[in-house]
Length: 77
Image 1 (cartoon, rainbow, N blue to C red):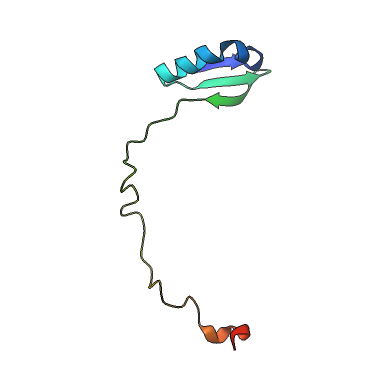
Image 2: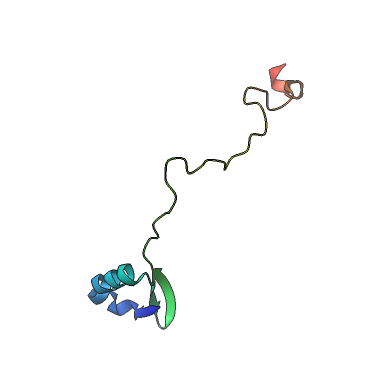
């Protein structure tokens, strides 16, 4: 992983971004030898956007059924 000082960032940002895209390696930005940020390329999703939520939900009841017993609500009587 490449590490660069915050003070050097404005001069080298273009080269660092190109390097991160080409190699896939993140770049750490440090201030006083302490890491403060990481620049990394976005990972392309392997899942299709269409149908990506298939089989991810669970039906737990009837959607038109009351959520609670209406007798317990004083303001409705």
